[in-house]
Image 1 (cartoon, rainbow, N blue to C red):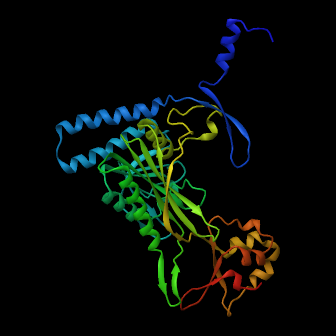
Image 2 (cartoon, rainbow, N blue to C red):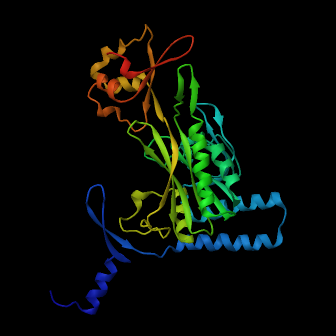
Image 3 (cartoon, rainbow, N blue to C red):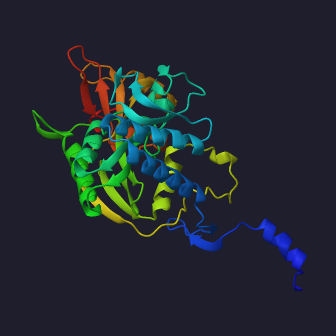
Length: 378
């Protein structure tokens, strides 16, 4: 091929994505793909500059403690509005779980979408929303330490906060944003591991037959981001061979703006279908150094509760057998299915009962009777 003229090269340059071209290999499939590395995360940098300048000005003139707390929360809300798509509404308030008629603590920053469902209540920035409307929930701390981090996790771990960003349904995230950290990195990592171990341990209960694990249907896992620290923390969920779950705390090294960029990407919702394959978000880069991982001791059980009709719909060829299903003369009411189990993968109800690790709740006027599905013949 002959050498390109200057004008021809300019045309080609206009068509090519910017940044250094990297060839990456997927570890699970071995497939190769191109990634154009561009370290110019100017949106994250602008977020950092604005937050820093506002706090520097405020702290020089205001010392009233209640006003200080409200200022830091409101600063995050107002600044996020500059970066979030218009479909992302931003306020403060409660997440109301209508199925259980309960709500948890007030959330400092609620990002939600009311485009296809009304809110329960709204007055200016204060809202009460359904879990299905939540995009993300954020707790704001002027200064984070071991004690107040534990308080946040303890008060949110068992709550239905919506905003699920996990491969398992109803495994959600609570974001903690800290303007400053008053202890060492190792101290805050150990504090997060410690409180998560306490939460997991609390799900082991005493029964007539000894210790047992109390199954739960949802949980909210903490991620921690800082304004001026060169790392951030994630809580990851791991499914064990037993079908139970465990947790890990992952400490990822990042520049200050890189950490904030990850925070921005995860708290706002963009329509990915409308983005080009090579478009750069200018928030953060998907490539990062190998993190440090801390294992959280203990395992717990996560389930999805499905009504009998859902099972009947999947195994419609076995309708008669399922309709006649009884245990000690009792009719089935619901199925407790371990999260991550795809019922459609099983060829028959019998195979599903024997291999899935599910349980069946039978209706009893005195109290529900829950029986392991592998003890039921069909």
